[in-house]
Length: 358
Image 1 (tube, rainbow, N blue to C red):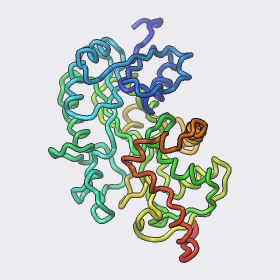
Image 2: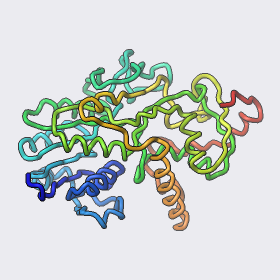
Image 3: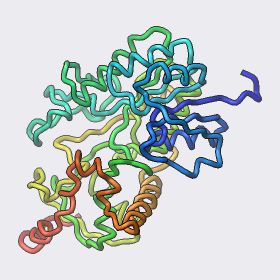
Image 4: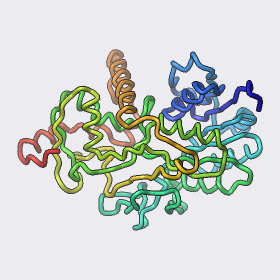
């Protein structure tokens, strides 16, 4: 490739949280980026000043997908889900410089044989090693649910000959344009001027977070060094849920007192989007050794961008006489986010029991 040749990238699912961050990172680095999406939302409109072209494309239309994808230096698939999607992508062998596919940290299986899809409570939560490494076992069964399907997708991709595929496993993703921004749990409390928060398990729960900016850095490195690999893609900070709360409230200029109690959550009380029966902490050592990865932003720096985005989005919704539920419809239906803000139960707990201050 000549010094003046512009590298090209295609992003499948390019207006979502990871696609938008990757498009910005690549375009700023001089790539010509083609963003393919279904047209459900516009993504990052500030990318119009960069070499980013947006097209509507149904990824289930394999003929059109492959025609658009062939010949690019990088194809990033942020929405591949199962073996069918893997079979589509394997047809790009010999036709792309590098393929990067987003999987999930939920493919890991605990020593007790459990995985996230089947958890009913703290007693059957996966007993993961600390930290989780890419060589640790992943779920392998015929269930047609999220984690087994993602794991099957990974295996199918890695079986393909001559496919330079990097599979990335993020954790609890956060960033602008997120359809399920867990940080809203604390951001809304700060906006509502809640001065005390109650957390279960002593506030010590740890569920590895993944800033979209940090994942975009890893995508860029994979594009620069094509290969066949599986890498975790999480923030190195490994903050506890209590530490996440402190960071968010401090960033928003609000004081907060965190009250904790031992043991698992009781109903909605003390339960958060990061609450887990055992720590889910993923190692980034492999990315550092193989690609020289160095985390570009801390959780605190990244979450400031998250807060700016979500407060603006919710304020805009309110001007349209809509609610935060209209901003996060999938979070309401899938994560039951309406139950995150049971302030009456918290106030009753503070009045009657107290707890351990953090």
